[in-house]
Image 1 (spheres, rainbow, N blue to C red):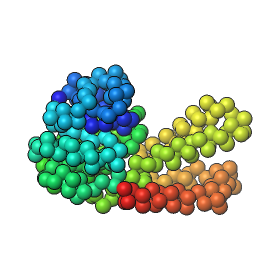
Image 2 (cartoon, rainbow, N blue to C red):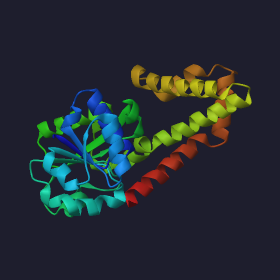
Image 3 (cartoon, rainbow, N blue to C red):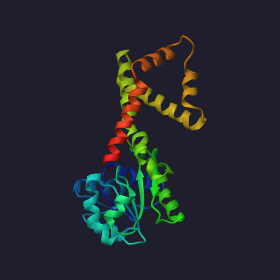
Image 4 (cartoon, rainbow, N blue to C red):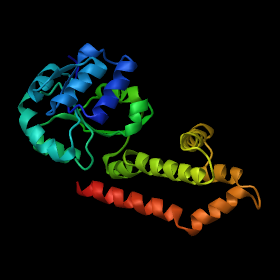
Length: 264
């Protein structure tokens, strides 16, 4: 085995799927454990990986270990596995709020750790992941970790101090976008459009708009201005959004999200 997952839930599954689809690892090179039998069996059936009920077995058989459990379980899992994590292994974490300093303290020794924050669009190979390695990884090991993370989307190495901002702008933000799509579709339904069609129009508009930001390199405000004709329909919609606090609501929601992340 080369890659191990402790935790086989939705995010772990998304990562596994991208890794296997892009042939970074073969299914037989991946092993996963999970406290819930149905969860680990689902990972085996869906991705063809090896499974076990032992976190220690995952660590022993893996070069890279992904800690994909909920943040509240990190301490107990680390306590269980720390003696088996040798200096040649790389640990990838995906828990908000668990800093590199906290992680090293819980391991009680020097461990190669890459703190990351992926998001759920990884499930469709469009994830955005931030990565902060600790000083114990070589440049080649950081590249290797990023190569794994790139298999399900984009990745950027950032200073750890920005990680809470990443939680709000990327890790949690798909939820905001889903609410926007749902609201847009509700409005279209109110104007007579069938709901399945409304979801398709709204989702495609969001996806296409995001692609314009990424591919044109233009400022989002400039792109917004391109849609807003004088005395037209769009500028009136923008006026209402500004009047009802749309921009401020998004900012305040993201600040609340980041504040919670800092306290986790």
